[in-house]
Picture 1 (spheres, rainbow, N blue to C red):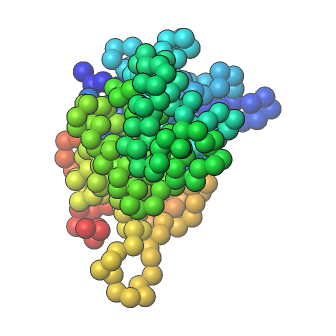
Picture 2 (cartoon, rainbow, N blue to C red):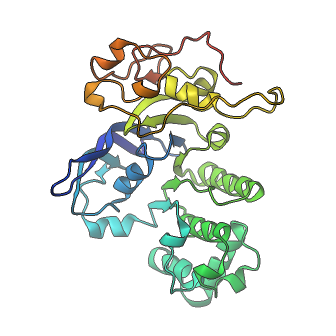
Length: 330
């Protein structure tokens, strides 16, 4: 049994006098112990909402959540707040996308890190302070003893992000959800953080759910990849299979829009036309059809289902997938 099994997860935001907005629409995936699974897609495709639903951090009012998310045999979507609070930090942890709004602005960094150690590892006083300094040093924050006394606004954006990562890995959680963990970091620190996450997965057996739009991070870290669009998975495959044979036009377009070092000088980029707002309801057809160069009238006649047109385990939600002979990035 996988450590985390998500089945038909749906999240709908409701408001009086307004039409319901479905952010996640029947997403399913598994994460095994010691495995890295990626959720990939543009902003607005439902990646972050999926993670917040799993952590129980969505508002209680104005949100309707469906499906199942079994973690070690327990459904996270039906657990009470007290049980979830006990699990967060020790068994479940999350690296948030925006460190400035995630950290408490009126509490020093040291107190925010040590309270996790006190709550879940029973460390107190000087032992907790030394372990907190060690965690900050581990994620590449210079002069950690001084940084423990500083407030979030006194740190750079990259340092705040690294402090969040230190808090998330403090208790070696069984499942770590990383929501764009390297967005605010330069290339050198990004490589250091990715190496830290790899080490956590390899040595501690942590299951890692990586949420990102950076396909370079996906190529170097993920074992399985789920490409999301408009709240649904449109392609799911192993990392090597996906990069070698992207089959859904959206996944193919994401890879095709990456700048290549071997491209001739002056060659224009090949972006996906339109934006995430140019979509239709899944009930009416393929949501990606308005932006797709491969769409046919069949794409507008019903909701496409996930199938395996190429190989076992490589699922695609498309009635007119990209042919295997099509040119794809290396």
